[in-house]
Length: 118
Length: 113
Image (cartoon, rainbow over all chains, first blue to last red; front, side, top):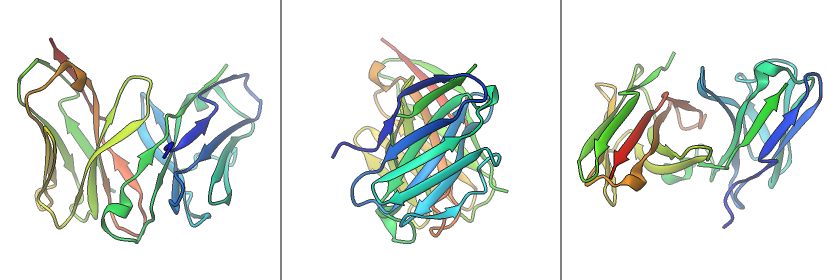
């Protein structure tokens, strides 16, 4: 399996521009998670989906952030408009499924997208 | 509110040494605890997952223990190697029906040849 795939790996954009991050979870995984990592705050969960349905978006910082999962193999995280404080590494992770017992909870992370907003 | 703390923040040891990384959490009502490894500029790699009903898990030179009542977990690395140099993160989930991981800040390990 190719693992969780994220694109782009690096994104540099100017303040005010729209940014779209993409994620392809591991095939057969039913849960998908978006995280943000910064030096100051560490790793934080932004939102997660189960069976393509958003379950908890309480970590989404502002209305400028939105996430979608139109099907089981694709998700996007969009920031519009972007700001310098959004600069961070954004990770996508997937798991077999929440509420499914033991090892199905184990989360597998993608390589991340390093976002720089100038 | 669940808080996860990892001590020390950084650790440097000579090759071959056995070492222990510590993780503590404030709310013992966890469903599971997961240890990850992160290499510079890379994503996270899952090392071990311990369910709340378990006391420990082992994988090769790694052994993770869990004492839920005291809110502690340790990651033991035997016979450390330079390739073990990375940041180690622990994370807990409160309930199985959330899957929400709460991460510690990590311990950055350097193993010197």
